Image (cartoon, rainbow, N blue to C red; front, side, top):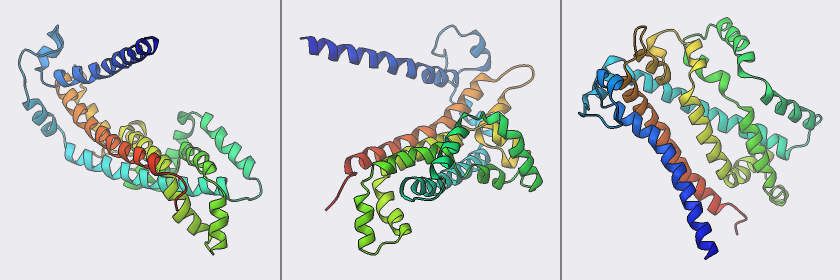
Length: 272
């Protein structure tokens, strides 16, 4: 009986947490279907009339197709860079012995404590000096590697038995082949986690794309949404419609790689 009450209590707490997460999305959805006047005067969460044309108006009010394309290209480039460069650096820290390894890793950890606002001005100065402002190079190249990803993968690589490396070297495998054919396949859970975090970070980023882009052709989704915020008021219905459509790719991407994460966890281990 005690176990049943404990089980019920856990589900009640989870249910309350789920409702608290769903309500903001429900409010965003219903607000996107209201008129502009109703967003300021409505007392309930549901609109008196449903205006689905708000989504068409939001998309026609700004070049959202270009914004989505720019965000997608930037996000994919950053994700690929994180997976490649972070995994290489993590493999070096986890599997290769070289002078000063521990010191370099400690310095790398220390950089996590440096606020982003401290480095963003020097980073922009470098981009401006290279004449990369308002290009995809400015959006992608400075963020091709990430300290968090390196540490995440390094810690996971440490859990993979080193006997696999020794057996591979006896069979004549090189270091690069061990990294590519042994470590990476066994690190699918960590890679899936890195892909999820990297995509969400890139897709939802606002400050850096705002600094390094000037033209409408290079704007991303998050910057495009700010176009609905005017000097004399905010079109909340159009803003919520655009925000909801901008949220859908993140949700779909998370669901896609969540399955990959679960599958990787189930299949990770020593194989015959």
